[in-house]
Length: 154
Image (cartoon, rainbow, N blue to C red; front, side, top):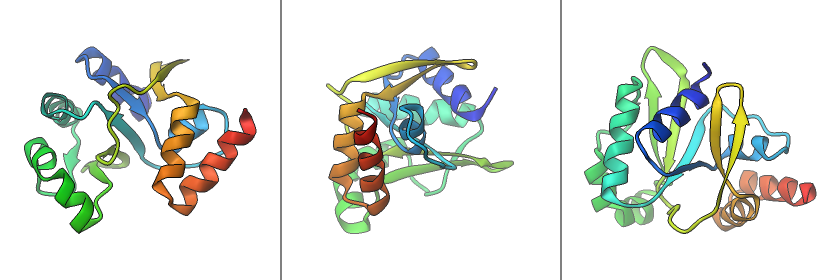
């Protein structure tokens, strides 16, 4: 089973509401986009962050930063404004191709998702319009290119 399916299946199994939001989401919506890491958004609450952190640990992933879900939740605004942190990064120490970012600048609450069925299971992806809006709001050049590519698909 490929990494993205392994993560998504584990999140579903533990009732974590998530959506894939990065380059994988762009590609899954049909735009040409290469990426190495899986970016996810979750409902922004401490319980969800703790469960997500525990699931990732069970999958063998570790945080790049010496922080916990409690730290990320408590100091989110400071991390974003003073440290320019956009995502909480995880990796697998024995397989560095397994990379995952939890986007801390985005709250999935109230946002629409779409389930895409793959050979490895369902993957929840942020709905197209929401993804375009998220990408444009970031202002990063790659995200603007992604939003433009997604707009052309409509």
